[in-house]
Length: 256
Length: 261
Image 1 (tube, rainbow over the protein chains, first blue to last red):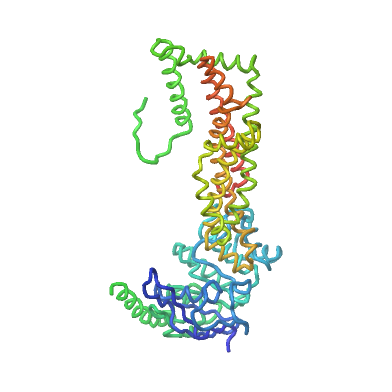
Image 2 (cartoon, each protein chain N blue to C red):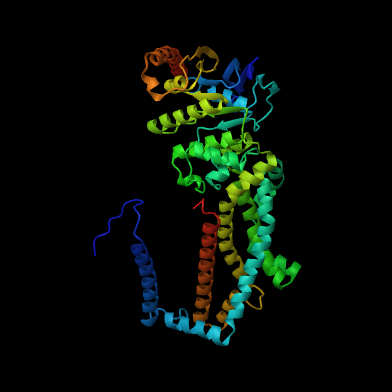
């Protein structure tokens, strides 16, 4: 038993206008240890976001259940913090007020996190005055301020440009290396998955299921120069192969 | 002058915007002046700009027109506030909770198409020709519009913001109070501004029928005396008051909701 246990979880969206239902996720099992950093890697439309949303309690699984610290997940709650791909800061609140939104956030913790994500001096700014990267840093601080048991990240850097994205990866990794937190990170970016995670679960094309579970044995703390190391390249070659097959399948399905 | 080339959505400078806006007014008044001065339109049908201004002066100086203006403003504001006090909370409840929406929405959608002015004879029967009847015309004209528009605004709150709030520990009531309400507030204020503009047309209709005071009443009186100057000045007054209230509303919204503008 892990800290987070996903048992036989599948998900099926009801058919549109009497059509057949869409199977987004076939029966999936996954066990995550406490303070581990897991990436879920898969081609677009493979159901990886659905899996994360089920863990968050925003979506109900058709079968199976999710246990966090022994407790079954019945709905969304403050013990599972989430950062979304879209910008979800509350536009009417300042950076500081956004970070304090959570039911368990405290001003001391908020101030600490504002410094940690490099937003000092921007406490009173509204989200529309911030760049995309700053907004996602605020969203990350907001999720962490609530002190969740697990951090769920749904392609949080997906909308950012490459340079900002790389800096955000280092920032998040740095926070994980010092604070240790259980993290479930969904991405379609192979480099991102290898660089950040201790374990990469590769999801197959729809209906998604875990087809490979790869341990990333790169030492911490990780430095960005590691992305060009031979060990990194070997992981990349292996995962690229796995993903390519699935991406091809996904494309074929669309044309079928 | 440099030739102006029109291209879609290319902004104009502030000076040019003001010049263009003023040019239209000058042209409008100029044409009006020419039509009356040349005798192309007889005086009985259309007073000259100067005549209209003199009539306005006379109205305020000797006919206590200030009182009429005050009465009309009070009716609009009173009827509009009655409508807003009922419609905004109901609209929010409908937007947030689907069973409440299902209960009220069909009736409100139907009632929205009942023309407020058609109620005037009935309202005179029910409420007489006193102030209550005028207020009710405004009320009927505004309340259903506000309910539906507020319900639509609140109901279209961004789903991802609601989900984010849930993952931060908010419960159902917290979602309404901390996400839906603050998110919808600027648009609700804009809706009120829009409906207030419509309320101005209802009040004049209400005052054209069986009123003892008000701008509409003055216009009716002037018709009997064939005083087109006063009639035009009355209409002009409504436009100015509408413009001022619109600016005040816009200014207040921008102050209240700096994050949205």
